[in-house]
Amino acid sequence: MKKVALLTMLVAAAAFAGEWTGYISETKCGAKHADGSDASIKCVNGCIKGGATAVLVVDGKVVSIHNSDAVPASLYGKKVTVSGEMSGDAVHVAKIEAAK
Image (cartoon, rainbow, N blue to C red):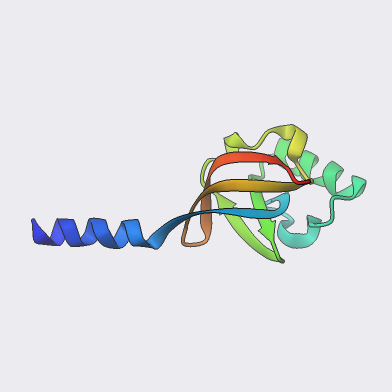
């Protein structure tokens, strides 16, 4: 029982809530589309339609999105602010909106 409680505490400590601003890209091109240009938006949309998964690019680092279905297509390739919980190198999106 003590081991289960300790493990639960470690997992809870490893995940933290926060807010990040970056660009929505996809798994195929990664950080290549972190500029919000029309060409990047077009490529991200095409790659996701082709089976790639949405990712968040923050300061050049690609962050996986656990619930990528929470990202609306209208934000593909664009600068966004994401609120959620980070665990390792992946975020669970609680809220996402276009960055100001």
